Image (tube, rainbow, N blue to C red; front, top):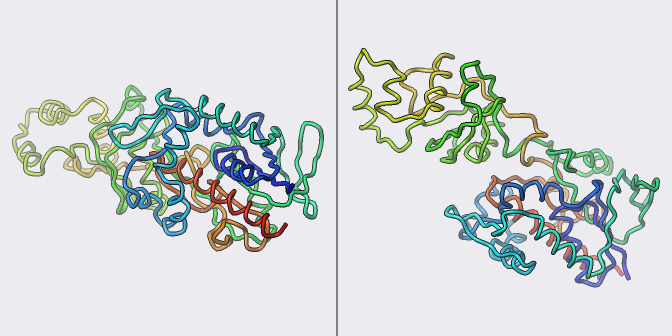
Length: 389
């Protein structure tokens, strides 16, 4: 029986392991952390958004430049398949008003427990606290609690994550090892990132307040999602999808009154009485909540125009550090891989998940692609083993 090694115990790695086990191969999963799927469990604390229930082409459009090469993988494991898979692990699901799909229990741990039980029943072995440190000839070398260990596998799937949330395992430490083998890599960059703003003291009372019913703009990208004012800036789903434009240097703007027509806004501006302060007018005429009024004053005090309600610049905004980002762009370049996600310069070595060079907004797209690429890499690794046995 051929020995298959999966390095990385997140969703992509576990999906690859399951496919290899289904094909009849002995599978060992090596994970650097004390337990598996830590980032997956952290995502589950906010409800575990599994996928997005929407037409396939709409779903695929969220993968931007990676759409074409991810298409066959996600076509074989799309939003419908993700739901069937989760239900097969005993999870009751529901679809929210925006199409996001969640387990009814709104957490990840029951699904993960059921999945690990199924993998165990299929013979998949797991080693935790095994940190991969590279190769010695063809052997994969690990630092373990019992000292340095080597595994001479017939095929290996790397599912090591990107370079954010290092404390959960995605530290990008694998990049120099692959680069040393001549693998083409795209530099890491933050994706789905919060925004850094150095607030003046008058914003402090509004920390934790949500900015709702707003429209965010950066470059050619727009979003109608909300964001929260934090001590370090702004964070939330309304901003995350704008990260590519902000990385490219575009400014960030917000429409504080997106549901007020232009004619109605102009009429209210013209009706403003000289005796009424701007704050009174924003509150009484436009019905803006305190956090929107505070943001407006914060930016106009920095030089924005009083007429900038429709396109208020968030002056001094920048992306938070990459390790704080929900995900990362960059990683193993498409040019380094064949259609089966095997490294062309390293026969028998496959890659999957967030370590590949793709990005997508939050909303179920990240997990869908991790599962799909893990499944694809696992299936192709099994087929490669069968061909080369």
